[in-house]
Image (cartoon, rainbow, N blue to C red; front, side, top):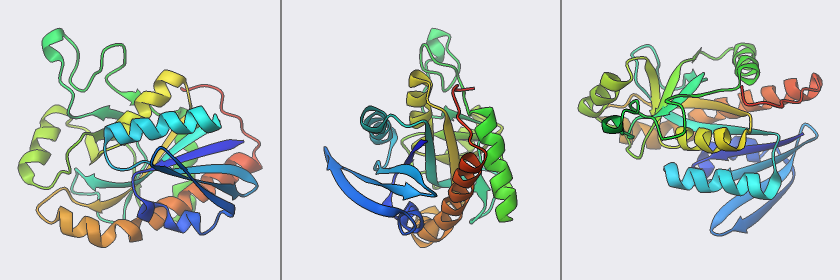
Length: 240
């Protein structure tokens, strides 16, 4: 089993990097990739950088170089609902772009041509992720995450997103792009995000304060997911 893990910032992976055996660091076109073993599983962690293009490039790199069986996108997100607080976990069942609008060509909001409006997460992996969060005794929410090249930090931005995606629970800057690439190349995907801020006027300050701390939870869930996959000798073949 070969597992690729993608996140925007090194701070979001520090806990996991400390637990990987035979850790090596390589550089490919200004992108840093860490390789090693976790629970006797080959792990490839790539620090993508922030935003959709950076995330797409990193996803392509990890597929091209390592051909992973599963990709995990981890990191932080901003809350879009009152019940989701800093430190809580989001395990999305679907993802979309909030900053794509081709409705004048009769596409749905968030939809790229030749792609669905929502990229649906692998159902088995989603179930395993939820079971792992329960085992860790973390508060979590499942639902729609939306992505775009904006750091959401005020009520107006938040309101605009909710007007198009009323059921969206969290927002961030990479997951839809990673999901898009995995959809095209039929790579099973898991997304685990921790809430670093509430998408309000305090978001910048809270993100800086909490991103490293809350990311420990996502890393612990990833460990549990890998344990479950290895112990049950699972091999995920299909996207859905």
